[in-house]
Length: 182
Length: 246
Image (cartoon, rainbow over all chains, first blue to last red):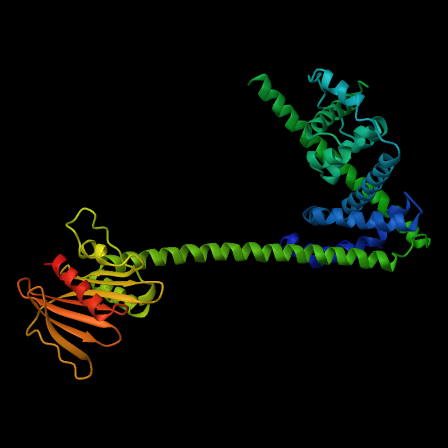
């Protein structure tokens, strides 16, 4: 059973012991999560190692998460690493054209907001089922993993401005869904 | 409120609302995933973390923090060095200003410097607007291969000038006030009395030649020393100087 770590007062960046203890506590879960995506042993190890390297860049975030959110955060990080490795592997064999119809449409659509019912229930589970995978992943990256627009842009190979446009569109669609208008 | 401001506020509201919603989602989702993991552990379906992976991850964590620690130390060292440099600069500035402006400090300091760093000291004073200095009078008479290494003037305007060439040969010129009786007495040095213009002079030979003469009219004693000239050259040299300063 995973026991939540006790929080330490001084800045996490100066506490390698916290990060090492964090790794010790959650390494089994990370390896288990990686094996959901692939059964290849070496691939699993590489995914977990890459995930650890990413976590090292966001050590202050680790410190701020409670137990359950840490699990979600790790789960999404492992998935993100897997997808990135898959994409980069695919790109070597099947070069992806550098066009995005969605981005084009997003730039062509007017950026005005329709009337939104702010009394509507903000339920993520409704959105998860209704939004496209891409829109949902964008919202997860932004609000759960806490990626910056630049980090998302790098992962998706868009410019940061394009990411902001896509996020705006994703939130607009999400609000329509929550209002029951889609 | 302008439409633009309204739009900004709506975006901020949406951003906050999405953040809160997704935070709640992360909490619920985490709980589900944790239950699933614990069930898998109980069923023995969670594999052990391979030793090779464990070692890789630990090493990565250690080297990351070692890198951060080095960077922090370097940053701290730079901050301290910068502060120390500023302090030193201020101290040197204050000391230089104090020594330069207080006669009681400047004279002993310069004398100390000349005494201990004679070969490498040059003191120069901008006298371009004042009447011709001793240096100006003397310079045309000094051979071309000699360079001034000491140019000193005391409070009475009396000079000590030292020149040196690349063969470490020296020419020294000094002017002092004539106090009391003009007399040179050396038991060991070879010397002869002679006249330089109309001045009573002594020529000494000891590790080169030295000429000392008295300008009774102005109450000054001149001293010239040279290590490279022969006797006749030196006497002619001093003759020229005496004429220049007459």
